[in-house]
Length: 288
Image: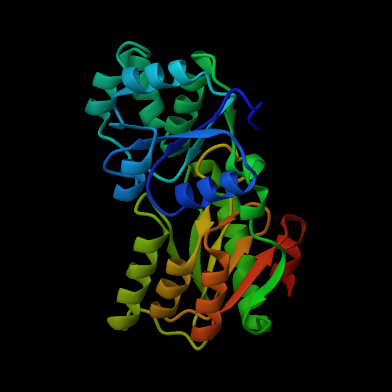
């Protein structure tokens, strides 16, 4: 939290999360400033931000933060993974090429961890959205639609097991399960693109199942909650419906829910269920 005199610094990337976090901080009457990354943050947010930098202009970003002297820094919203050559050029003053190559080889988790270390090395405390705006985390239980049937509960359990198992490979935070079959696993393309891929499989009849399937999304095992928390929102429900799915299940208390009222309204309108699964019940769901 801000200490009053020193602001919270919001590093704003793409998607709806930066706006949702900013609104939450306003409601709490927190002192904050926004540094938006051009090309990722919404154009309106870039114009309203206290500063707007290029993602790879690390020197300018650190100078901006040094001038603000923030109580903490929070990263909100995704940014596309830059080319290794661009990272090497931009961070040459802070990491040598061999160390950067090792970071890039570790995948997104390693790269994001490197960003956190860079901020901490420069004297900044990095906080998570979950601590600054815990109300954005999805709650437990059926949030919209009917209670999932036995087939959907089995699919959810398989999805949670799968995501927990592949965590150590720095794989995605979402999967689509149809019946007892893994239909898709999220990669670097993100959840939206994965759901479009599932829709294409439906359209081309590459996947047929009596049970239409479920989107399952949650954190990786041991994930640092300060970076890249999974998120769902109205668009998630719309794309899940277009992909022919029965519903969406997420890790309660571990997944950000953006524009929740709109998302639940969309789910009810489209006949999809939305279910928050507590961490200690993920395995029990499998047995349902």
